[in-house]
Length: 72
Image (cartoon, rainbow, N blue to C red; front, side, top):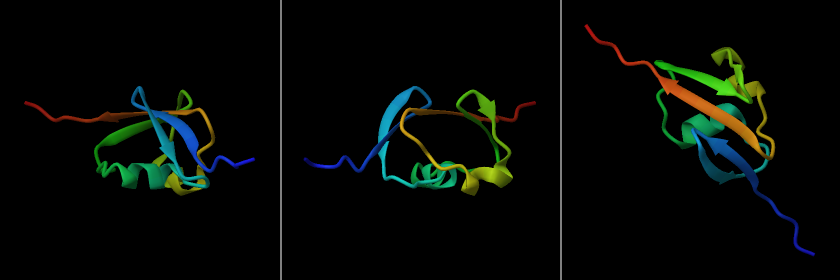
C-alpha cells in the first residue's frame, strides 16, 4: 500500500496539496505573500504573526489571508 505524503489545505477558498510538516510560514512563503500588510486566519482564529513558524499544517486546515490596502 502506498503512503500518501501530501497534506490537503484550503487557502482563501482554494484547495492545495502541500508537503507534510510545513508550517504556516512555509505556506505563506511558498505563495510569495508579503507578510507586512496581511492578516491571517487559521481555522477561524486570528494568528499572531510571531507564531507562524510554530503552526504546523494539518490535513483539512483552512487559512484565510486578507491584504490591507491603503487609500486616501
